[in-house]
Image (cartoon, rainbow, N blue to C red; front, side, top):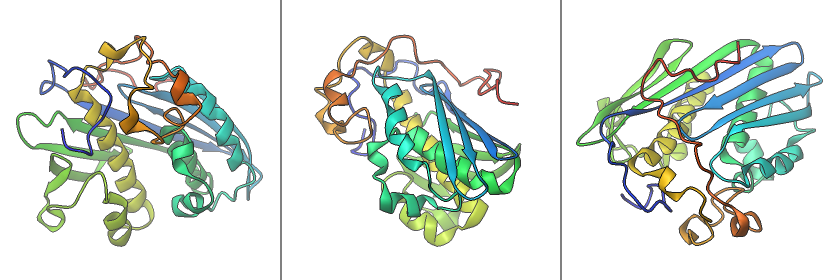
Length: 257
């Protein structure tokens, strides 16, 4: 794996090349409340965001399935977003908050919920990243069942379409994506980017690290809430929190409807 790949896993996944990472995000806005959820092979979070029409007044996260024992404590830094304008962009928030002090997935879900508060209704994103083994694959992003992006990808770069050839999918993605896309299209691109990032874990046997501390994974230090101190010193990888989402029949965020 290159330097942008997942770190801290000791054993390769023997089934890599036979499946895919599927990730779903659902956003439901009703009145002054947004219910949101994200689920993939390694995570399952829900969140309720309440606002007064202008600013966040309450954030209630739920941790259904998380990789580390310290992940639920990320509910505390999330409360710093209370009082924030629901019109704030990810870039606005990143200037006043350190996203890495948060759970990456909760922080992103909060940003999406804020944007959806104005939009209203229901929105569903589906990211599918087949295993990039032995060669390139077609990575897709669907919004409410419609394919928005279909990119041929390999080793963290886009191969097709031609106009995006050689663009990075990990480090450096936000820089070029924010100059090329805007509005709903930019939101969709960022959702695909985060799904692709998570898909990198499929190359590794994550469960092999169950019940073990992660403090020795120094290459991950300060990557997110759980990999920051004091959480990193006490975090343990949990057993039985990984599921195979390759089959489209596997339900994701099925409780949000």
